[in-house]
Structures are given as C-alpha cells and as structure tokens.
Amino acid sequence: MASGQERILRRRIKSIEATKKITRAMELIAASRIVRAQTRVRAARPYSEKVTAVIANLASAGGEADHPLLREPVDVAKVAYVVIAADRGLCGGYNNNVLRATERAIAADAAAGRGYEIVLSGRKAQGYFRFRDYRIAAGFEGFSDQPSYSDAQRIAEAATALFESGECGQVKLAYTQFHSMGVQEVAIVPFMPLDSGDFGSGDADADGSAGGPSGGYEFEPEPAAILERLLPRYAEARLYSALLEASASEHAARQRAMKAATDNAEDLKTNLTRVMNRARQDAITTEIMEIVSGAEALSQTGGEVDLLSDTIEARTANLFRARD
Image (cartoon, rainbow, N blue to C red; front, side, top):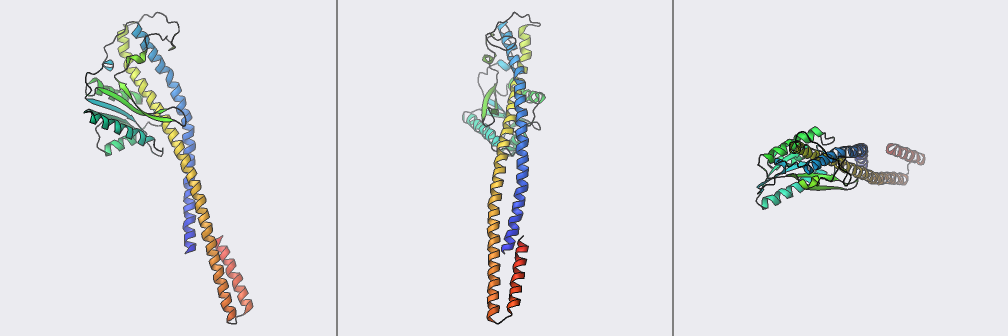
C-alpha cells in the first residue's frame, strides 16, 4: 500500500513540474509583452495630445460646433457602458474586477430608474454578460493583447451610434487604468458627451504645450467645420488610449498571476517530495522489521543460519533496488 502511495506521489510531482514549466513560460511572455504595451501607450500619447491641442486652437479661433458629441442631455434615461476586458483568462482578478464594477454601476443606475446598454470588448466580457442575460448592444473580441486604432474606431462607432441616436443620454468607459507594473486600477469614467473643458481655453500651442507663444492660424474650411470632423477622432483617440492601458494592465496582471502559480507549484512540489520521502522511509522500515521478524522466527525454529543471512541480504538488496 505504501508502494502504491509512493507511485501516486511521484505522478503528482511530475505533473506539478510540467505545470510549473508552463506557468514560468507564461510569466516570462507576459513580462516581455508588458514592455511592448507600455511602449505603445507612450507612442499613442503624442497623437492624442496633438488632437487636443488642435481642437483647443479651433475653439479659441471661434469654432463653436453644434456637434452631437458635445450636447448635454436634458434627462438621462439610459446609460451605455463600453466595457473593456480580456479575451483570455489566467490573469488573476483582472477580468472579474472590471466586470463586477460594471455590474455595480448598472445596479446603481437601475436603482435610480435608468436603463442601460452594454458595448463589450473582450471574449471574457461577452461570456460573462451573455450568460447573465444582460442587454448587449455590440460585442468585439480578438484584439485585447494588441489592440489597433481600427479596433478603437469600430467600438467608438457602436458607442457613438447609441449616443447620437438619443437612445442613450450618456456613455461611460469601464476599463483598467495602468499606473505602473504593480498598480492597476479599475475606472468607470464619462466618455460621451465629450467634455469641452478637456480642450482647454486655447492657450495650448500647436505642439500641445501650455503657456508657450501661440501664432495666428488661418483655417480652411471654417473652424466650426474642422471641429466637427475632429471631435469623432478625439473620441476614438480616447478609446484607443483606454484599450492600450487595458492591454498593459492585462499583461501585468497575468505576469503576477503566473509568478504566483509558479511559486505555488514549487512549494507544492517540495511538500509532496517530503511526504513521498516519509512514505518511502516508512515502507523501508516496515519491510526491514518484517525481515528481522522472519529471521527471528526462523532462528527459533532451528533454521540454517547461513540461509537466514543470505535471505536477509537478498531481500534487503531487492528492497532498496526497488525504491531507487
């Protein structure tokens, strides 16, 4: 019975070793992808800053567009949520945190008498909300690891359609903000209508720096017409930035989760090895006691001493050889 237990423990140790290799590889892959994701976040920032600076200059030049994205609703009867999650799991509480935060926000809206619509990004988000029979306006997946600007455009179009049609009086973004390798925070922030206060008061120059000398610009066509074309680009840039931050947060969460899994596998392997060694020692001790007891019984019955010695030696050798 002890031998059977030892075989079971050996199989478990081998299985844990294989799992540890997988989790270690996933940890290293996630760590390398975090660096690339951070680089993409930094690379996208100048575009967003430039769009904001141009809109600020247009506003200071007299561009007052009556764009649907700027219209404040009189009464918000329904809120749309753009929820950004991952396509895959194995990333700790990354998905659950943003999904449950969205659930709580929807419940708060329901308590206030407001309805909701959901635009989902990520396979995990779609599976979560479809299983619970939430109303889903649109769903997108397949790009949470490396989102592109075209992905942000498709999601922004779905959210813009809900807002401009008047079906939803407000659109909010639910995603995970990336602050550092060790700090990521779930945030639900207003997305539409766009806040004109974010554009500044026209004191940003063409390079997006505040307080510098600003030159006079001649716009063709009129500033209002350009502003109407730029506002959707601004919304897309904001959504793209959120997708990139969520991607970096996903990789950071997966790296931490896989490191914890690797450490746990190592601890479990150590503990099981100790249990196996104790079981092996118990089995060896038991068999030696059986041999000695048999030898004692044989000597009392007057058996041959040389035969007894050979038997003990042979059985002991076989015992240790079987254990090795």
